[in-house]
Length: 163
Image 1 (cartoon, rainbow, N blue to C red):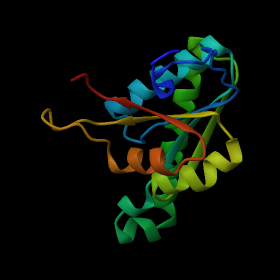
Image 2: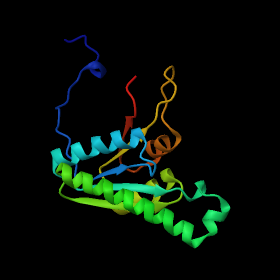
Image 3: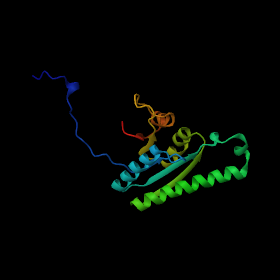
Image 4: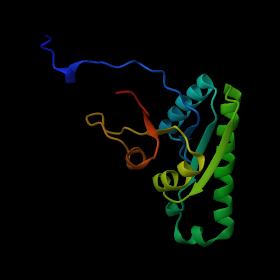
């Protein structure tokens, strides 16, 4: 008779993870964490040969009241975001990802990605970046934390800098 606690035995088979659709969130300001998350995502998409969506969110709350009410200024910001997301898509294709979809939203990034982008795109995995500013504490940024807690899919948070 075994005296081992059954709760402490590892009685399972290791299974390969399969991904069918990936989503990576990148900041419109090209932060270091976004670039690292993007690199992680294109590596996975190329390796698994799966579709990759790249999303960025125009944070309209960051615009001052005059800019947000000016159709020309808002249109210019939208065009800048569109140009940037298309550059990311081109980089992914140049890297070898064959199926790339650029996506844009407007509002608070975590909320828009969790409540609009994920239900529409239906990824298996969301990859987001997080800046680490305090070397003495480990934490996840507010948007990455929101997505990790509320997304309907698995989430990988990629740190901008190694500790």
